[in-house]
Every structure is written in C-alpha cells, then in structure tokens.
Image (tube, rainbow over all chains, first blue to last red; front, side, top):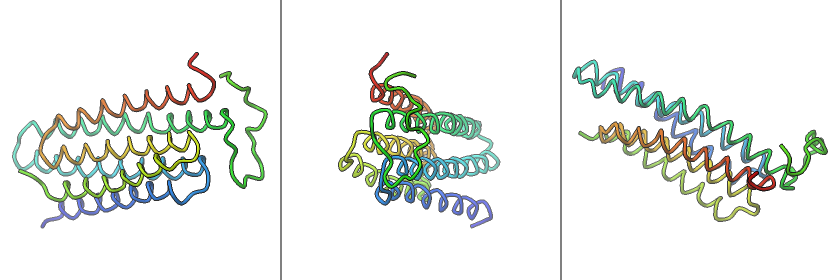
Length: 123
Length: 87
C-alpha cells in the first residue's frame, strides 16, 4: 500500500457513492424533471472520478513498467470522459424539452416559466 | 493480471444499473423510462472503463467511447420522436 493506492481508493469511493446516489434519485423524486436533475448530475460527477481513478492507475503502471500500452489506456479514457461530458447534458436537455412538449407537467410547481412559450411540435 | 479493486467497483456500479432498470420497468410516463435508459447508459460506460482497467484491456475503453456516442444519438432520436415526430 503506497500513496497511489490510497488516491485510487478515494477516487473509486467517490465514484461508487455518487453513481449509487444518482440511481437512487430515480426512485426518490416525484416527477420526470427532478429525476433528470438528480440522475444526470450525480452519474456524470461519479463517472469523472471513475475515469480519474483509471488515469492515475495507468499512469502509475506506465511509470513502473514503461509499457506504452498504459499511455494508450490513459489517452483513451480521457477521450471517453470528454465524449460523456459533451453528450450527457445535451441529452438531458433534449429529454426535458421533449417531456414538456409531450404534455408532462411538473408536480407541485408554482411557476412554470416554459408554459406557453414553446409551440407544440416545432423547434 | 486482474486488479480486484476496479472489478468490485464495476460490480457495485452494476447494482446501481439494476436500480435504474427498475425505473425503466416501473416508470409511469414515457419520459421517465427515457431518463432511466439515459442513466443506465452512463453507468454502463463507467463500468466498461473500470473493467478495462481491471482486465488490462484497452479495447474495452474504446468500446465505451463508441457506446457513449451511440447512446447519445439514440436518446436524441427518442426525444425528437416524443416532441412531435421525426422531422
């Protein structure tokens, strides 16, 4: 057990905590908009720390063994993280707008600022 | 050379993925099910990256990249269909 192991354990603990919180948020919130809020934010944050743990692990293995396979693993993990960070909020926005346009109303909402501003079926 | 920490982390993340599948099965409206599928996709990508580190295979991480982009396209197609047809 050295310092790198403790850093990897801390990153993996944050990853597990936030990913499980994101999937529990799907069952604890009342309507689709709050579920989208909890699930998207928590799973994106947890996946950032999963990729950070893999990056630390593979950079340490690259330092120990000198195998260029581990450099490739680092770079591809970062590319996967960038793809997820670009696509996840965009998909969540598209789901929220489509849910509002298809007639699902927010539960217990006092002010619905989108009401009447979006035409049905048009962009 | 398997790293047990990454393997068990991926196992616990798959438990979270099963909880997301429950929302897909139970969801009262169609957008609820789509939110469940979106969460499931993100968790599967995280699990694939962790399994790639566990089994020392870079090809798993490449498949995670392709899966993230394809699931994004699928989510966008379902969202366009829900808001009034694929036009």
